[in-house]
Length: 113
Length: 223
Image (cartoon, rainbow over all chains, first blue to last red; front, side):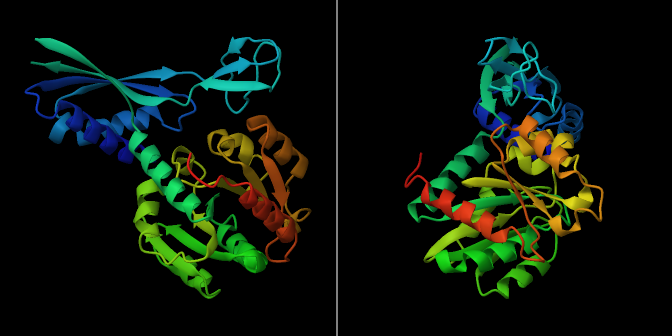
């Protein structure tokens, strides 16, 4: 349910990035990790809702979802565990680190100039 | 002409920066800060009250109370004679670092050793927000069911400490403590687990001792 505040933060970052540029925003490319706690569908709805006016007006939003990545320190395998299980999908060890899945960032903006 | 600008900006970067600032402010004042998370009714306020009483001899406590509406919890805690700041989010489902920053600037934190931040009752959204705390404490009450750590892994994965509350009801409700503990460790291997009944005073002194020992290990400055 916090996707609305996240959409407002995206709007703020976009406005800041495009400040003093005479360009028309056409697309926002976002990356959302499976462990970020962000629901892509809810985020899209929030973005569509707030983009009827303001800095995001008329933009398209594309979300690339990234899976959880577990790097095993027992067998060195790099696998994609499915939450709620955070372990190596090859040898089953829980010793290791989550090396991906928590990301949530604006990758790029596409504009018409 | 169509142009692509690479941005690579974390959407939560501003919150992280503010959280780092809060952490620096609190560490410099030797204030050990706990982010208390759990469902509505899991016993967050009652546990905080019990811990304030138990920790009384080792230092003063202060509380930031987060609620959607009302100052009921804040009024309850202030009866203990500690500094309380009430935040009403008016619908927002979590606290963020900026709200904590604004609260800190309005509080009297002289000689404060422990700061409890009671987050909004929610097992989803608080997971994404660093507030500048030292310890993230997640509560599961026995009537809620033993499956909560498994069903809300994103939040429990961020928790340093799992507290099973209302432990006096074990036996009266269906709650397999071993399952809850095993699941919590699958979600986060190094999570510390405590069982308490704040109403009966059980397990509170062990938990308070743990918090005290963690405070002694707190870094003196940031980072």
